[in-house]
Length: 355
Image (cartoon, rainbow, N blue to C red; front, side, top):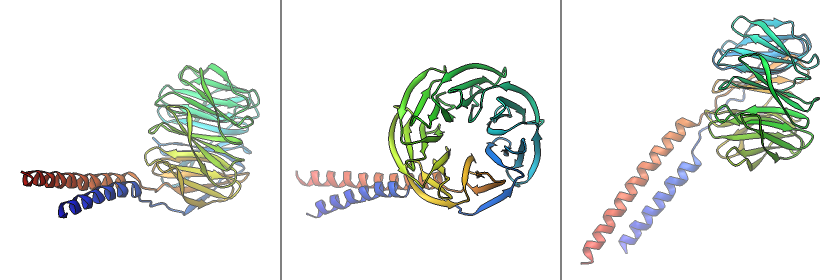
């Protein structure tokens, strides 16, 4: 009878340790405090070079790109001579910046080492930009021409185009080479491989716009503006695994691949939703004013532009995950191993007594 009690107690201990591992996989240390920087004119998009810790903000109204130091948050340079700049992308490996002149049909290529314009390429109505630093390919959506342009970063020439009905947001997984394009008017996500071949088209929810990829987990996140949700897609199977409710009009989205924390701008409610990518649920909200575009320097800062204004909001990316996860794993494994050893010893003693 006493032995049965010990066995029952050990089973509870093992179950508790695994429960502890699941429930405490993350300890959050997020900050709701934001810092606002005033930028002249009407700003559009924002991009970050994590290697240099420089932040690039397009000024749609004044035809400039403002450059900020990511450590001090101070303006360090202004690059002008770019008409109607909106979309922007950075290759941290080559230190090149790509800016779309939305209403002048040009893609401007900036040498970020010298902060000078190196070249311009003719692209009709360039909108969103994604860069694959692994193969140095730049992808530019053109919603008015129903095309995605593929620019070779080595030659600064257009290598290819592929068709997407009214393409909007775009993201690339540098580890797999897969490219993901939202089609806002058709409620679909187009998936292309590294050779620019269409792999599949995924039906998401209503009015998809922003898209982001976590290359570490091969997970894709899509904001659905009219559904007020985020679709979570398994990059291996190209199937939707979760739909996460957020606030009204989720526009853009970024992910920290190191902590698996996802940030969503909800334009309709002046809120940033913070999602735990492991549990696939909202774990915090951050108040901002009219959040529009968003970029992240992982484990440092999140940058949010304000719609039709000259304000840039800066949020500390201070959510901590992996240290607590590692501690939980080690603790649980010690408990389970000890429990198994004790259980084996007790079973051996019971067997010896039976003879």
